[in-house]
Each structure stands twice: as structure tokens, then as C-alpha cells.
Image 1 (cartoon, rainbow, N blue to C red):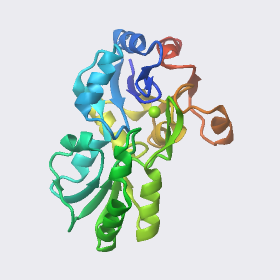
Image 2: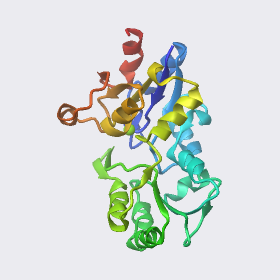
Image 3: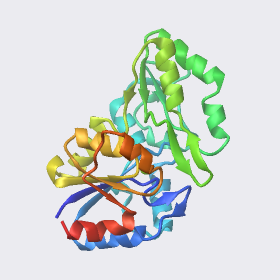
Image 4: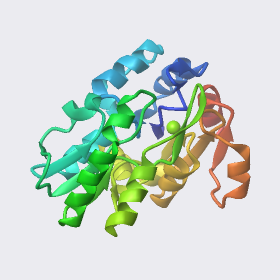
Length: 257
Ligand SMILES: [Mg+2]
């Protein structure tokens, strides 16, 4: 029996539209005795909302089976004064840090979503405020540094561009809290009490999911859904252990191992 880390966006749904066979795959993986953890770089929904969303897709799970970047931030920044440019929905998950408008110890950037809120969170005024804090010595953290993600309307620019911009302007390097950071995978393995060599990471992102997990010693399965691009795989030097059509194929593929 294996431990399996499952990415969510692009694996189980795209913009909320279910990818066929996902719920059934989770049920079969559980029946086969595998231990599961849902590991997501989603930065626009609280853990409770994510659990609801997955249940609407027919997946049965407990809220504490979901590992989010906000939880990683809460752990890394506990007790510190933080200027947070994040979506309102995840503020409830940032427990233990003091959210401030100035005089911050750290600046925290979240991700974009498909609504107008993205434009407000990452407004010039807010980015200039963040730059001022970094210039005064605050440390830069981000929930992820993703360049783009796949939506029902096609690829959409993510907030990695703002992280890179602030790094450039302030001459600093951001600490990434979500995938592909080692700390994120470490927390997932600890939660499952699993060894890296006995654990699979399943995702649609060649860099955050596959390369990130490989660096940490996990075995990897890339799905051909979500942001999967055949050209990107062929042009990269990243070799997942397997590529399957979708999450629906995973239970059979694992059984044949
Ligand atoms: Mg994904």
C-alpha cells in the first residue's frame, strides 16, 4: 500500500468542471488501502471551501486531508507582523500571524483567481506598499510562484509575475511556501507518516508537482489533463515515472505496478 499525494486543480477539475472518473478513482484508491492527501497550491479558497468543492464533485474526504499553502504560511509566519496581498477567502486560514498595513516583518503574496478581486489585491498601490516594506527590510514570502494556470477559458496569468517583479525591484528572493518547495512535501509526508520512496505525487504541473516531488525523492505520475502540454514534457529534462490520461486511469495503473 502506498501513500499518494493528489494535486487538485487540473487533476479533479478545471474551473470547477469535474474531470470524469475522479470521484470513482478516489473511492477505488481508498478501497485498495492507499493513504491519500490532497495537496494544492490553490490560494483563493479556504480549506473548508475546498473540502465543500471536492464533495460537490462526488469525492468523499475529511477537511484535514487537504493541505493548502495558507496552512504552510500560518506555520512559517506564526507570531510575525505580515503585510498579506492575498484573496479575502483565505484570510481565515492565516491564523497565528498579525496582519498589518505597515511596519511588517514579512510580505506575503498569494495567487490570482478568475475574478476582479485579483486586480484589487495586486493593485499598483498594494505592490508599491509591499516594495516599501521589503525595502525597509521585510522578508518576501509567496504561497506559490506559478506563472499561469489552466481555466475553462484557456491559460490565465497567475501571480508569480508579481513575486518575480518584487524580487527584481527589491533585490530579494522570495521563499516559496507551496509546491514545489521541499517544506510543503515534507509536511505532506509527515501528515501521512510516509517515506518519500514509498510515496507517489500525482499532478498536472510538470514543475510544481513533478520536478518538485522528484527533488524530494517521491515517485511521480503526470496526468494528461489540466495544464498538461505534450510539447512541454518533450522539451523538458523532467521525466515523470508515468504519464496517464487522467486521474481515472490511476487506480488500474497502480494495481499493475
Ligand atoms: Mg494542478
